[in-house]
Length: 335
Image: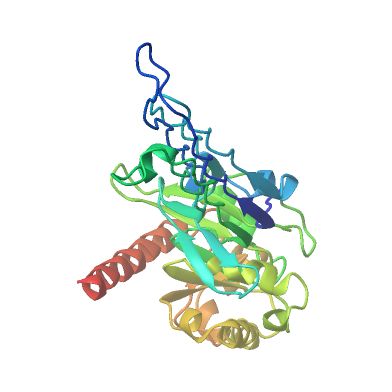
């Protein structure tokens, strides 16, 4: 099960206290101060791990507290720093400050880190306070408290292509044919209750990731059905593939409904490159295959049958061209 939302509380460790100590050496009755500093408290760090797929661990353990630094000691020995507490999260994790709602980190690439709570600095030992006029200070600092943060974690899947369509439009069947993914498939709506990812390999050098998303219904952008819970997963995709059942009563109206829900959810999402795909061609009699896109009012659509394989190669090549163009455009905008 995909766990894509969690609330956690990160608490960094306090700095260790400084030490009040004086040298005790033979024949040196009045040794000077030698109290060491305290160690640094451990920080709480979110780190992207490519082997982590969900936020399940964060959901099950909502509180993370790092250790405090060790106290300083005599002979100018500094206390040991506490180890940082690492929270492993999947790629695509968005971190929000729970109190302000502000996005404080967007962790996309493997190894990306965000210091959610920083460990406190260790306190100064009394050796730090010695002066020519005050040679035996009995003062030391306590460690500085670590910071803390209440966070909301949200996972947005990273894929090149997002399959968008009404329930039972054939998205899961398509994913199972063009990738090695094994989504649940059945002849009734809402079979897919969570996003599925699969990798398409056109050849050795051309691969891309496809996301099969739960079906949209009218009002999804306002939260109806599975709504916004899964619409956010297509925000990072480069290309959208709108899938329309060729046997629908009005395929054109179906496409307009999908476009409207996407646009109402996000104007930026509606501006992404897209393809229109008429699915389930195998459910029409062979004599009706010719010119089916024009009769459906979608002359620009690619027509496929995931069951028979008809049109799949043409679809994958078209998707690759869209992905390559979107990638090149993104690289130019970053320059």
